[in-house]
Amino acid sequence: MTTLNPTSEKPLTREGFLMAMIALLGLGTMMVFSSTGATRVLELRTDYLLKHLTFLSLAGVMFFMVVNLPTRLILKLAPWLYIAGLVLLALVLIPGIGMKINGARRWFHLGPVSLQPSEFMKILLPLFLAGMSRWSRERTYTLANGIAFIAILVTPVMIAIEPDLGTAAIVFCMGSCYLFLAGFPLKLFVAGFSCIVPVLGGLMLYRPYQLKRVMDYVTALGNWENAQYQVKQSLLSIGSGGIWGIGPGRGLQKLSFLPESHTDFVFAVIGEELGLVGTLATISLWLLLFLCGIKLVLRVQQDRERFALAGTLLAGIVIQAAINVCVVTSLVPPKGISHPLLSYGGSNLLATMLAFALIVNLTQQQKNTHSDNQLHSTQFD
View 1 (cartoon, rainbow, N blue to C red):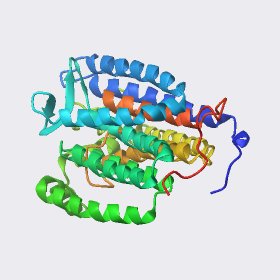
View 2 (cartoon, rainbow, N blue to C red):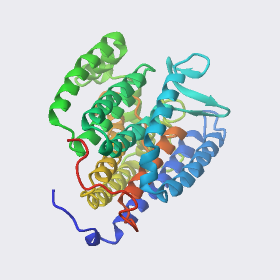
View 3 (cartoon, helix red, strand yellow):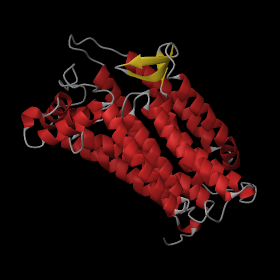
View 4 (cartoon, rainbow, N blue to C red):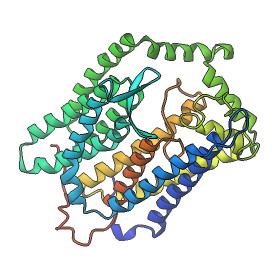
């Protein structure tokens, strides 16, 4: 990978990243209101919009706070934040504390809102690994490698128990991505993945509905009538929008026909109301954010710790958006994966904005590189 001179960065790279993020936030706010503002009896609802705006305000405040924190302080707090996240993952499994919805115990009920700890582990696990990388400079690499390996295995397992296999897989992949970018020994990747394969097989046998989803998807590839209900409704929503869509707020599928229209399948609502133009514009915004993000990440590639953490967070969020689009368009078997910045959900919004704040923080110029404890070599060797 070619080393880039920080001064060679185009002036609009950071601005492009932020503009794409703000545009997606604006689109998400509009689609949350559109997908929840009306019911079958055409009653206007604003409760979802008000909750979304509340979380959006909190996310904005958190974004500016994290961007302006010293990176050294963030990495110092990383292990404690990760431990707090593990405690919340354990507490949410306890009946009476964690809230059970549709057979899964993933949420804490906090008055009119709910909190999903597993969403934050997508960020806290890579952040913990970065903190361990910093900590390992003063200890043995073997101990740091062992702790990192255990964290990557334990965290997804705790999330899978809820059960939430989709989020568990994303968390595991983001942890693995960090270790890969940080120069983790390849032989340990081989050992880790060899352990994960039988675990996934066991989960499929323990929860047969996961395997059934895959088999139903394969069967439906040759026969539309065998497709699952949500897949049919999603494709009908996108197809009915045509090129230009039927207009914002005028969609019909969201009126109790399209399941989870405000969360997992909000992209289908975009297809119906804004048409092919709207879906392509959404994908273009993500592409702009990704390309600008890559340029920002490459800017700090000589500091392996910053490079690995920022690259992992960027890849994790963008890939999650891509998976959601693939699920909605039936390119992959259906799975409950929300669309970052667009889907309704306070936990996901806060976690996504935290990731973007960390990316900006890690890739901005430091006034004093020595005071921020920058790294210039691989920490896991």
